[in-house]
Image (cartoon, rainbow, N blue to C red; front, side):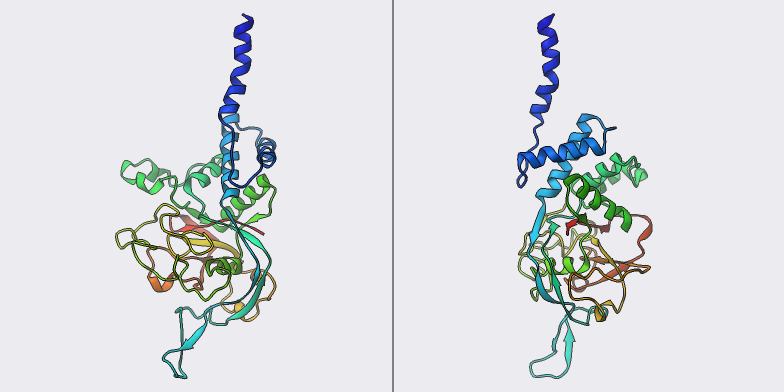
Amino acid sequence: MKTLTLLLLLIPLIACTSQTLTSESLSRAEIEAIQERVRQAHPELSSAKQHEVAELVIRAMDNMVFIEGGSFMMGDSSEPCEPGSKRVCWKDYDTDNNHTHKVTLSDYSISRFETTMRDFDLYREVMGKEPYAQDLRDREDRQYLFQPNLPAWTKTWAEAQAYCKWIGQLSDTNGNLPTEAQWEYAARERGKDILHATNNGEINPGENYPSSEERDATIPVGSYPPNGLGLYDMNHNVSEWVYDWYSEDYYESSSEEDPTGPDSGTLKVMRGGMSVSSFGANTTVHRESRKPKGEYYSELLGFRCGIW
């Protein structure tokens, strides 16, 4: 009887040992601190679910890429349309990014990958929310839309930011959506004159960009090579929410030091190109704007988190 009792007491310890969490960037003490914060923030969860959440947070920290701050000229730069010509041409067809201006950023970090469906689904489950697009998830012929490593679908800017702040709370960091300036600076490999955030600054379908057969839907994150800083999918896949409110003429009045956009507005900035868009729209300087709350969850609207 004593032997049986001892074995019953040891089973939880064996289970915990078999599920030891590991990290590429965090110390054992930092991992244990995350586990404790998860337990304190979500005592209602089972130990198994708390373990999943801790894994998610550790994965998010491992995916963070440190970006050394610096100065760069933000926006689309012009150049002579032909050698010696006085007529200038812009690299991007937008007009709201034509006012190039100096920006100086402090150090920050940004996620290597767009937030995945697996991680966002777990977050929503923990928050007591029903899965979005349940009618599609129930259909066998639509299962391909919900692979765990596809970019998360979003409906609102607020939910994307809340996810990043939740990651920050559980990791004891200043988690947030990256600012528009941080996003562009990283996409351009610390502000270099790079138009496409690929491994070579160019678009080569099937090599560093979705092929024509892949461009009618999103693809698993990290399917193609990253840019020079190790950041994936900043040139294709989905448009990404960033921190800033949108203003068409903001570049004309932007502060130089760590700008965060206008104080208020009706639209939020989105960055990054959708695979369904044309090559010309998927540039490092292209700006989009959307209402912060949509009518439905969209597979083309995603995000990645940062720390700043």
